Length: 528
Ligand code: 3UK
Image (cartoon, rainbow, N blue to C red):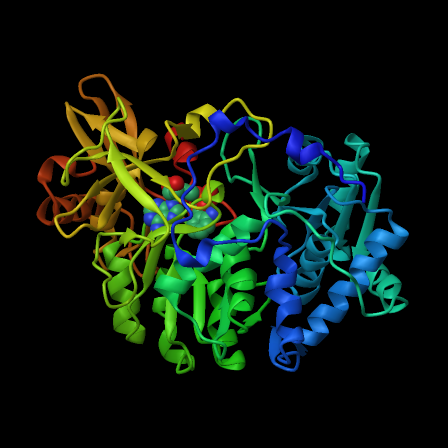
C-alpha cells in the first residue's frame, strides 16, 4: 500500500532526537503496531464488545458500537475521500462521541490526526493546515465557518466533511467492518500543536508506539484505573492532556469516558453526578472554581482527581480536599512528551511538590551548562523516557532537545524526599534587586488569602530594582479592590513567605487572560 512519506521526511534527524528509554517490561512493542487496534478492536476481539465505552448527552456507545462507527467513518475516508496512509486529517470540534469515532477512524486508516482546539479562529487554523499540509478535515458542523474561512487562505485543504449531518449519512451507508492499516510502530499517528504563545506554531509528532508507551507509564503506575472507572473532565481531545485522560487512557484499561463539549466548572459538577463519574481530569483553576460549589452537587461517585497544565497551588489542593475529601493527583506533562512524566499518587502527594519521576522516565535538574545539580538547587528540568520531542520540520528542535534530554523550559528543584518541586517557567523567573523570585510561589501565597479568587504574578521593569514583583488579582465577589486591600494582601504575603518576595504592585482585575487549556498567559500580563 502507498504511504505518504510527508511525516517521516520531516522528522528531526536521529542525532537531534532525544534519547529514548524502553526498559520497562510494558514498553516492549512489536515492529508492526496500530494503536487503534490495541485500544479499541482488541476489546471486541476478547469478547468485551458489550462493555460501555463512550458516554455523552443521551448516548451510550459500547466498545463494539464505537468500533462499528469508527469503521464506517474509516471506510468513508478511504473509499470516498481517497485517504492514504500518512495523509493528515484535521479534526475540529468540541469533545464528543463523534470526535472520538473520527479520531479512531483516522488512526485505523493509517492517517495522521491533526487535532485543533475548538476556539481557534481562521487566522490560527490556516498556519496549522499549511504546516501539516492537511488535505482533509472532519469538522463539527457547528464550527464550520472559521474552518471555511481558513480554507479560503489555505488551498492545500481540499475537502471538509461535516459531522452532525453529512458524515453520519455517508457512514450509515457503509458496512461496520474495516481492516486496520498495518502500520509500523514508528509511523506517526498524531501531530499535536503546542499551546505556544508566540511565533510559528510547533507541531509535535507522535508515533503509534508513543500512544501505547504513554498508557504503560503514568496511568499504569500512578493513576491505576480499573475497567469499571468512568472518566470525565475538561481538556479538549486536541490537547494531549485531554487525549490521554479522556480517550486513550480509559480505553487502554477497558473503562468508559464521558465526552461532553461544555466542561466549564458549572457544567462539570452536575455531570459528575449524572454520569456517576469516578476519575476527573481538569486544570488547577477549574478545581479552585468548583471547590466553592461542591456542596450543591452529588460527587459521591468520584474517587480520583487529576490536575495538570500548570502548577497546582497548595491552597487549591487544600480547598479541594476540604470540599471533597479527595487528594488531587498532580502531574507535569507536555505536548512534546505526550503526557505526564512527573507525578505523585494520592498517598504520596505533598503540597508544593509535583511528585516523583514516573516509572519509564528519568528526570534531572541541570545547570546552564547541562550538569546535574544536587538536591535543593534550582535549575532546568530535563527528562527522557519512551516518548519525547519531535518537532515537525522545525529549527527549534535543538532548543528543546539537548544531549539526549528533553528540556521542558521549567525551573525545578528536587526536594530531600526525591520529589520534584516546580518553581516557574525558566523565562518567568523574576529577578528583583538581585533576588530570584518565582512568580508561582507568590501566587501560591496570595491564593491562601480568602479574598483572592485568582491571581497572576509577573516581573515588571523597574529602574531601581531591575524588576519588581507585580500581582494581578481577581477578588472573590464580596470584596473591594481598594488601597486597604492592597496593603492587606501585601502584609499577608510578607507573613506567608520571605518578605522580599511580596508584590510591590497589585492591580485588581475582573478576570485573567488564559489559554483554552487553562494556562495563565503571563506574557499578556507582562505586556499590560
Ligand atoms: C506546564 C505544569 C507545573 C509546564 C500537558 C499534562 O500542559 C501540558 O502540555 P503543554 O505543552 O504545556 C507544558 C508545560 O505546562 N505544566 C504542565 N503541567 C504542570 N507546571 N505543574 C504541572 N502539573 O510549564 C510544562 O512545561 O500545554 C500536561 C499532560 C499533557 C500535556 N500536554
